[in-house]
Image 1 (cartoon, rainbow, N blue to C red):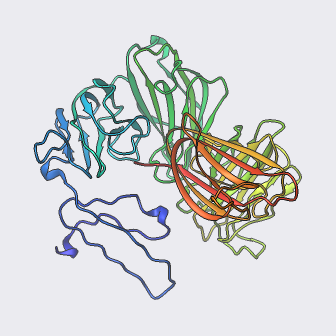
Image 2: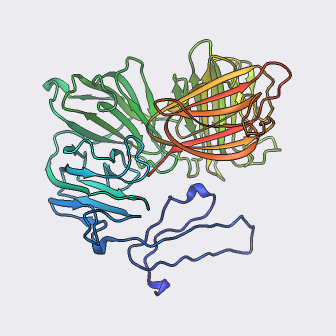
Image 3: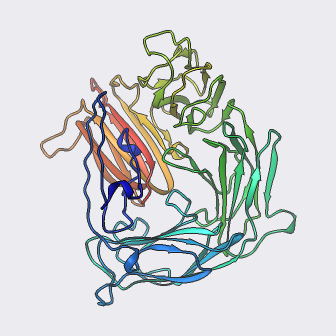
Length: 522
């Protein structure tokens, strides 16, 4: 293989989070080049590779016809699909059309809803960063059909090394798009109402609007005014998401709600996705959108704040204030996950800096590349002030804020804080008991949780933590996924999670921990 003439699949550096999961070649050869310079060192990298089938034998490919069929791969003709497959089809039909997928047959290994072994899934766009329409396994549910919101989609089929069944058969065709489109946000608020004066639209429906500020350095602000979508929020909902989402983008899923919700895009565009099933009795939604300046206001109990243009470099000449108003009677905490602003952490930060203030507490000016400790406030309100000058700029910051009603840094609802980061109360100090803190996290898709337990507790001979621990549970029966009290690390993949932090009464020092959670792209 001539490396100089080969197509570049990717170029990666930095931490593990910059690697986009599995990397797949387009043929039966691949090369990997490792390049270093004379400055600095790192831990390096490790990886593994394996051979699998590709588009040449029917496992994936690019489909551009207005209709077609996708089936599972059966190379040996035994009536069952092959092991260890990762087939990806990208489908593109005519402009101004949408794609209708009809799953006529399905018999796969695995069980809903997690589908940990074999599954099919469909994305509303040409990449796995686009909104996921479904993920299916087992043999129940077929036949069924779904629609995309655009003229492009990705269909994925993945199998494990264990077991195999008859597989699936899917047909697709195009049809006219009746909703959605491109909208330009301006400095004046505009309203998006659906279905509007024509009245409710019956039947299964999926629509997408792209909101564009029109300016590379200006975000989009979306505010929900009225939501009446249907009784089953798993099938009838609005999804607001960054476009493109990437690793750090936000997704917010809304259903029936009278509580206003505000969304700020990370960059210049956002997507509004509306889905209803055939039995929906909702009347639709009413949203307001506009160009956002860098002054932002959050009225939720949890969320994520990033510097403008994060994770790329922030803009010059910023003078921004982000205000957070959590429910009365709660305690607001700010967890800084990433941080890099011009200056040095030991200096007075005369160039670029960030200040967190609230409830008779202020951090002072923060700059440099050292990640500051969490900030635990004595009340429900806080502000994040950002100032930058005209010269050097860096990636800025990512902050998770959470409000708790049981004490500073002790519990809360993390649903609107994904991707995010939290620590044990009073981190980096080890708290004293008694403490019983509970965080909950509900998500329409699986979450990847990385646990870093820094230890101070002890386990019995069976390895069971007693006086202090962090316990993670999830699933419909709140199954325990482990207790952490000693120095250890772990990773958990689940959809709905509960984190319980316990410190027994008496002279007990609580164990310390860090939790990082992000969307899992299967």
